Length: 390
Ligand code: ADP
Ligand code: MG
Image (cartoon, rainbow, N blue to C red; front, side, top):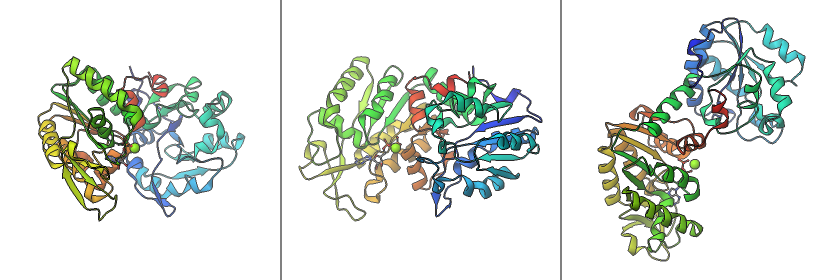
């Protein structure tokens, strides 16, 4: 059972809160405030109880104290969305910081500088975690996307403070947990994206749960190659052909229907003005690149998805960033939004594609905030930082 904040009282207490404020920045300002808005329920709940919030997050992958990745530019957006005063602590972690947490007025926020500026964070250094624990009376994690990493601010600190999950983590665990433990059927897993080796875990894990597996994206090229089809100059992984073959055999043995592309969008170039053709898998020429699923495949995938009680989708069907190759991903997104069943999607690029098509996240039952964390959760792997909140 997850320990959640709903049943605890934090009035007057210093709550050390780990968020995922890893927002895209544009010209030194927040480019997209989705991640901040997602933290609002937990932040408001804690502030309304009269707690003092000490906020920690990472931003990007700094090597040392890199001020281009400072969290300071987020302050106006945090104040606007969290509706309170946000103080900032950017100095060295000494007694002045502990003092600042104690003198913080109830209902206000103290934001710490990018936690990854400290090399001890990613090393999950025990002394650093202990020092971090001095900054709060209790610890709350609402950064689902970081739970697969054992860092000081996600895992280490939990050894020194009572630790709880925020509402975002709670919701992710409820929805994703339902899909893994008790899915309604018929159930389809839709997988695309770049590489077999990042997706084979989820594909194999779900063989025992799903009725259909729909495979698109660059990943499907390796599966087509495994079936002896030509792939031209497409992105594909020769060293994963055996893995793909093994998966197809196992699926067949278990009676799971695997749908590979029936037709493909190919081009000799990768550009906004590329000239494309739609061909059958056996008609891919040596100078062709496979860049999307064709219209017959779109129809097949859309029809299958629409009749499902549960759909999980991870990974774009093609190189959606360029419009000649966006059709397949758009069709799958639309089919998911029209599906009356439970539709769960996630993955950095999959969610980016939804935004790219200007579709509303509310068109789906659940859009996960975790890329790697979602995949590992769905693969049934224990997430080290989540285990500590149980
Ligand atoms: P996610 O982040 O949603 O898990 P991935 O990172 O696995 O997805 O893959 C997304 C990337 O795969 C996108 O940049 C997309 O352009 C690329 N991609 C998908 N299909 C193809 C293809 N046929 N050829 C080249 N790139 C592709
Ligand atoms: Mg990605």
